[in-house]
Length: 205
Image 1 (cartoon, rainbow, N blue to C red):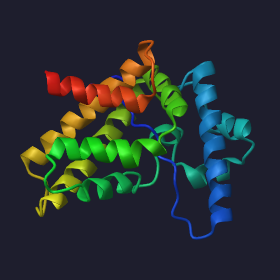
Image 2: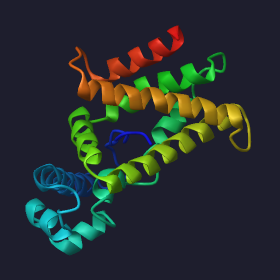
Image 3: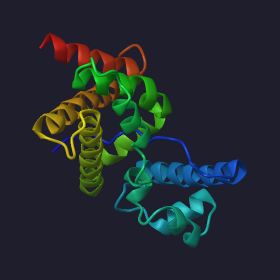
Image 4: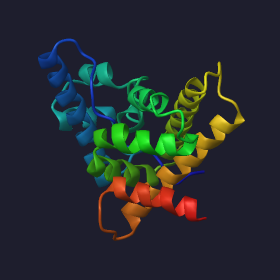
């Protein structure tokens, strides 16, 4: 099992009304922040939805309009959360090998949407709870499935083959290793740089 290997949360919205979209986004982030604070203070299992809603200053009904459960506050989210990454992978030059296509798509189109500080808080919360570790693993599998599907589309395949799934798994392993290394080890530079170093290390190995 991967230890707390959640993917950083992507921020963005396809809402047609910008003002409404920003308001919904603020509410979602307020709930996320309240949950992460409470998980750090008293643990995931001991935190209730009612407590999260009260800390975020929203009603319980509002909480459930955004999240199906308290676990979804960290690892839930829109089904299209990886759509931008998929599109970026498909658009990479045909001359580029699959792993470098994923690496470039992550660096140029996906990581700029990531909130590093939120990633730290999510990872630390997940490490304290078997339930959150399981949800983290589910998200990891969805990430790999989305990447492998993008790689298949890039090659004109109807569905991912073994090589697509292998590249997606390797890319996620680099990402997971980088996130945990960045959190646990004093290193200079941001998360994107540490991920790039991970791909460089993989090439050396």
